[in-house]
Length: 355
Image 1: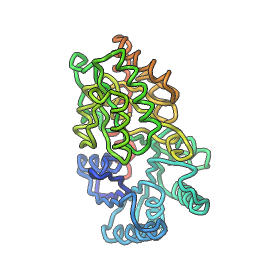
Image 2: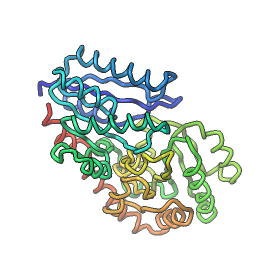
Image 3: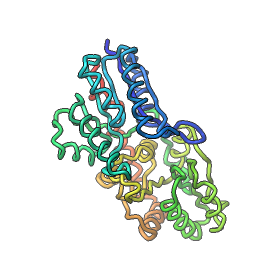
Image 4: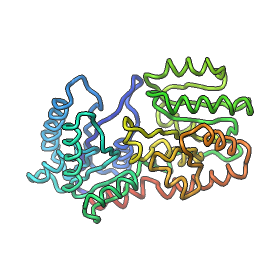
């Protein structure tokens, strides 16, 4: 393992700090395997106009890659992967990997900018040595684009299975439901709260813990108060990944409620990192069918896949609360699914051969 790896990614941050993401998972793996590496992280948002921000970051990546003298380049998102391809073509790299952690056909409202984004995405996929994709739907997309099958890899947003806490079934709080969510929009959260009020009226001891932060937080608090469930809905804010996993591991059930719309079109191709973490903690999931991860939940019977409506969400929650045998079965299946998608063996198969 004499090669040196460079990871380049954009990082989403809230007022509480950076959100743990795919680059952190890969970086931790490199540290554990004692593989030489460097990391470049760019903020996802900026006050700079997008063209200037993109041009500046690409130049920075080019110069730093040459300075660091790396061999393997892993670019997370199209623009970073594009820089890696250019560097390899002019002889500064041995291998480039485009790690596609999300995809959408309508990234930008501006048609010209969106067409440039799609061109860069396809160029990066076509010209990288390998294309890692977080979901089966993106894998299918790459095949449809004519990308060489030999370089298409499935590398989901999975955590390290061994690092996720799992409680004995007897220690699980059967009255605790958890949801990890950015508090940035209302549709999914309002649906969850409306359903939870009905659940709470039937099961008054049940509590809902919401982990996350965002601009919708104050309106969410007002909504919780107006529904009269403020004593049973806990807003704990953004937690470190370790604390988040511990909260999840103590819960009977976790919610992954995604809505699909033009504004959130990336959801269809996405692989839900929080859902993979729920599963690795042995916590079964209720998930909407909008996100690609729902395919695995249904295949392994590791939870319940629903449409985005009150009736299906209510029925699914009540099923878990009332049917202990069903909960035990889906919990076992969740662990099986998470172990099969443990990121460590996946990276052993994809990353180690490169270095």
